Length: 115
Length: 112
Image (cartoon, rainbow over all chains, first blue to last red; front, side):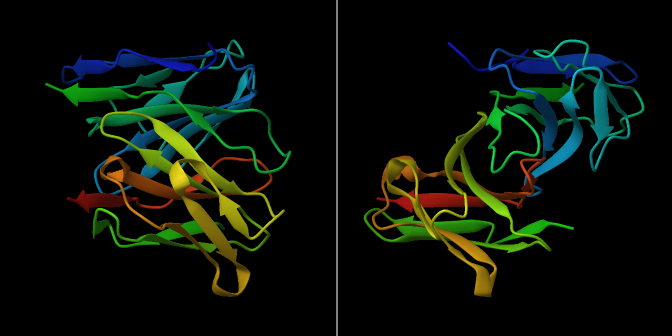
């Protein structure tokens, strides 16, 4: 079954701790994205990657880091520099870049809570 | 720069009534437009997309949207609401298959 898998579904972080959210896809998509969702604010782009070993900052990259060592994996690390990390995080992928109206496919999300 | 504005953060309709969710976009080049639906604590699912092939786009679950360039709009409609349509709906824009820019979302409630 092709799709995007995010893990864990729920994650709790202590103050000052780094945590990593996993995102894996088996759709053979080139592009992958991380969005943050807060109530009433829609989805905001954190980082995106259009090819292995390359990624770009989105609108709210401060306090986050990513890597893209493999085509199918795009983990997101929420660092201690992110002052308000409690949110719902969504990973997405799309088939390619620059080739028409390619929609993004989404994982089921990870809900991160600071305790 | 591209942007999307969804008018109304919350819309409530009665079961069987028309659903109309509004989306206006801003883009300096011909846009690609999408509507997604999100159920609680889940990811987003594509409802439909505008590909420039036809201005009236039909999607899943009986939804459709009409692209109106003169009004820079891409409103989502469904003739008859069902209880299962209650969810949050997002309009999004992209350019040349790149990253999606989302609106703030509209929460749809359906009353029995």
